[in-house]
Length: 288
Image 1: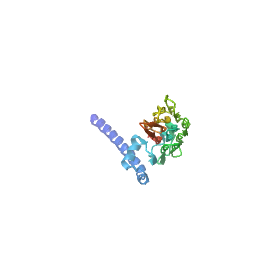
Image 2 (image 1 turned 90 degrees about the vertical axis):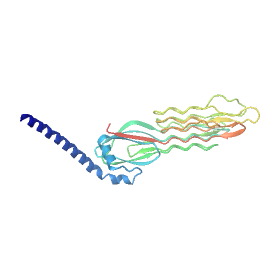
Image 3 (image 1 turned 180 degrees about the vertical axis):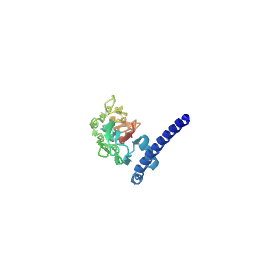
Image 4 (image 1 turned 90 degrees about the horizontal axis):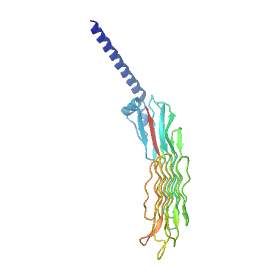
């Protein structure tokens, strides 16, 4: 008889625990049900089952494309961690006698913790990368800032500068974003040697590499030759600089774009535009 009583008590306690869990889930459901409509008009609406799952087990949200977003904070979340960066600046445009600097990397943070209001909406704006300068004497554009509600604004990198008959100027560093590298100009009648400067390291990512100019700078039908500087780093890497044959790489996560270059190559005047900066980036986590 006593054995049965013990078994009954154990079962009763187990049922009470299950009932408590059900009540907790019901409370979370009730708290979050009214949040569905608030996400339907945003760029990325969140289904109810996803909201509940996010509240119970935590989640990671990443935004790597420039644009506006709304993140719904669940009822039980009061702090978040943020890794993010502003967008990179574009590299300047290159030409036969126009050397271009690389764009700068965006300002960045890694795992910064912020307090948030439960059941609030967090408005996020991921900055667009600055456009690279067109061929010729055209500077790159600055990258746009990344804005995370009223918590933090991360500035974008500056654009690279194109300079006639001299070394192009890499973008100055903004905050902990990397600076763009200077370009290289080889005048007509001078043998090609050396390469443009690399961009500098950002908070995490490396600066893009420089590159050696290409072209015929001595003898018949010669002309000047130039190469663009590498882009500055951010969370991601800066882009590699270009010469008249191209050779650049695409920057990542807030990295600056490499500058363009030019040269007289294979009996043709060839010039390349600057590379655009990478868009900003945001990663938000809770439940850690």
